[in-house]
Image (tube, rainbow, N blue to C red):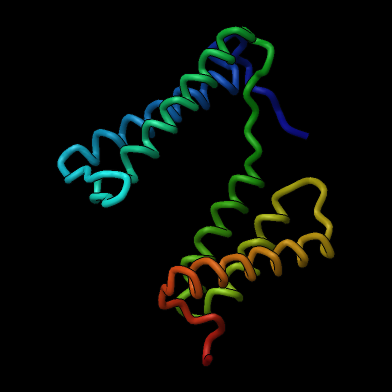
Amino acid sequence: MRRESGRRGVAANQDVLAGVLFLLIGLGAVAGARDFEMGTAMRMGPAYFPTVLGWVLYGFGAFLLLRGIARGGDAAVSWGWRPLALVTLAIVLFGFSVTRFGLVPALVVMVLVCAAAGRGYRLRETVVLAAVLSAFAVGVFVYALQLPFRLVAGL
């Protein structure tokens, strides 16, 4: 069971906090890409993707912020430390294992660890999800984009 913070009101609303976070990340991405060449949609420069993604995050953050303000203090913030730790661990394990063991094992490990962060963990569904995600990633990154990922170590 999660403990709720003692704060109440708009400042304790999850949507408000998430909206502010997305606004800051979006503005940071746009500001960070300022010094690079933008390019066009057909010939993207190094600033194109971070700028577009930054504006999308900014828009999403504005939407969440306004929704949170409209709701008032209904949705109090609570932290799920176990899911936060497991999702962070999954990302670190993926980064560590993708170069050592290959793309497919790294994705499987990441999906299994992330699934353990949820409440309704079902092994069969998680294995199917890992297989589908691995097949999709191999199709897109290895075959379509021809990125030099090893599928499995030793192959």
